[in-house]
Image 1 (tube, rainbow, N blue to C red):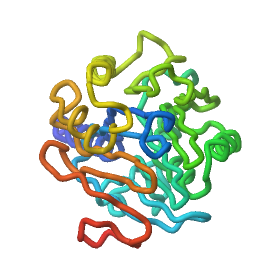
Image 2: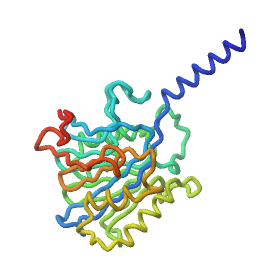
Image 3: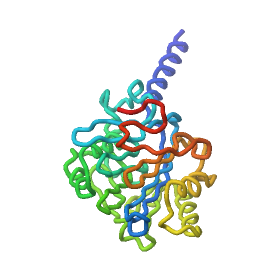
Amino acid sequence: MLRYRIRNVFVATMALFLLGSRPADACTSVIVSGKYTADGKAVMFKHRDSSTKEVAIEYFQGRKYRLMGLVNAGWREHPYAEVPPGTPEVWGGMNETGFAIMNTATYDLKDDDVPAALMEMEGVVMYKALELCRTLEDFEHFLDTLARPMGVETNFGVIDQEGGAAYYEVNNHRWVKFDVNAEPLGYRVVTNFTQTGRPEDRKGVDRYEKAREILAATTVPKDRWDHEFFIREISCSGAPILRDITNSAIVFEGLTLWAALGRPDRVPCLPYRFEENACSCGRGCGY
C-alpha cells in the first residue's frame, strides 16, 4: 500500500511538472536591410520549431496600436502557467504602424539566479512592445523601462517603417544591439545563440551555418528576397532547418505579415493585413 501511494504521488507530481513546463522552441531567422530590398524596407523572416503543433494568426486591439501576431492555438484555454490569465503571448507580430518583432530562444545569456517561475516571458514582452512601439528607438526605451528582471533570455529581431532593422540580445538585466543596416553582407542570420553569451552553451549552430551557406550561394539578388524566397530556400531546405517539430514560418514585408501555419513544405503561405480587419485565411480569426 505504501509503495502504491508513493507511486501515485510521483505520477501526480510529474503531471503537474509537465503541465507547467514550457514547450521547447528553436528558430532560424534572417533580417535583410532595406538598403537592398525593392521597396527600401527591411524584410524579416522567422522559421519556428516548437513542440506546440497548432498555431494561428490573431488580431488584437492594444493599448496604443492594433496588432496581429503568431500565437499558440488555444492559448486562452491552456495558458503558460506563469503568465497572468488572459495575457496573450505573441511569437512574432506586427502592429498597424509596420513595427514588427520576433524572437529566437537563447541558452547562453542568463547570468543570474532568477528562478524559472519568473522566466520565459518573451511572448508577453513582444505583445506589449507591439502595443506601444512604432520605431526601434521606441523599443529601446521600452526595454530600458521594463521592470527587472525582465524574464527573458533571447534574441529579439525588430524592424520598423523608418528603415530600422536590428537584433537585440537580451537577458534579465541588459541588452546589446546589432544594427542590420551596418552588416557588410546586408543581412544577418540568427538562430539560438548570441555573440555576447557563453560559447559553450550555444544551440542551433548547425541551422545557423546551413542558412548562411544557402544565402551565400544563392544567385537570387537581395531585392528579390521575399516571403516566397525564404519559404522555398530556407524553410523547405530540409534538415537541420526543416524538422518534425517545425510548426510555422512568418515573413514581414512592408505592412504585410506572410505566414505558413504548419510545416512550410505542406501548407500555403498566406498574407495578413490590417486594412481588411481580418486575415485572408477565411477561418474567422479577425478582431
